[in-house]
Image (cartoon, rainbow, N blue to C red; front, side):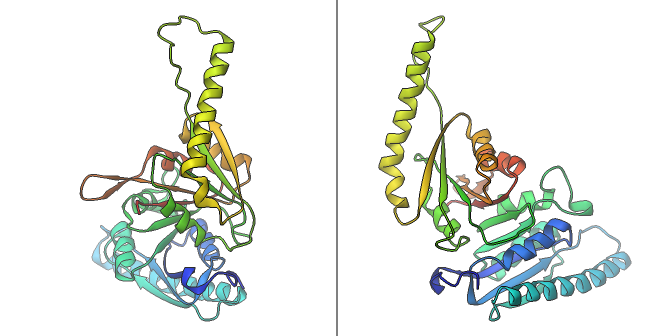
Length: 300
């Protein structure tokens, strides 16, 4: 049984699963069945047809969508039974609020703690990397968003946690730990640091020795900060610290590729007193470039 070693109170209780019946959406269905769900968890499958259709056409769309949604629910129930999760309840919701609002309303109404959706959609959902629907849900969702971009084959075993000592990260780890079965394997923890080339203005052409000294100093300072502010919070999990010089927008997805990670976890920053979420460029580039699933966690 997936999640059998998870204390029940630490396992997922309520999950919203958005679907547009695309291939990635089916992968999301399969992924949910591999998450550490509580014995009596509730998974709500939600679909919201696009708005703007004529009334007669919309009725046909909704009728077809309802049948498809029921079929997805049956598929999810089979996956859950195969995973040994027979106590998990599955319900469906066909929203009339449009794709984005419909998903967000379901999250709030069901008090979901996680929303799961596919990385690429079908038809009108498919745009560039995520599709505008998925992108806007990740930005606006009040809970963590798990974006599934590859066909799941097993529970998560190779998580990558992106941390910055200057930003709150403990709630990101807490959300990520709900997705990974304890004892599944070692966590990779990546931090991207910059090199402050002090004296660049005064020195027209710094020597290679001076440049190397600046890089060593920056790396040592980054390690000191991590050892002081981050590593004490990771004592309960087996982990490997990865210090990488460069822009985190490229370092994080590149590290996920090199380490063969199956899920990357990272946070976003709050914007304004209203607490709206800004999908930072690091999260966006990770969603765009990482070959695996991505967990995006709003401010805790």
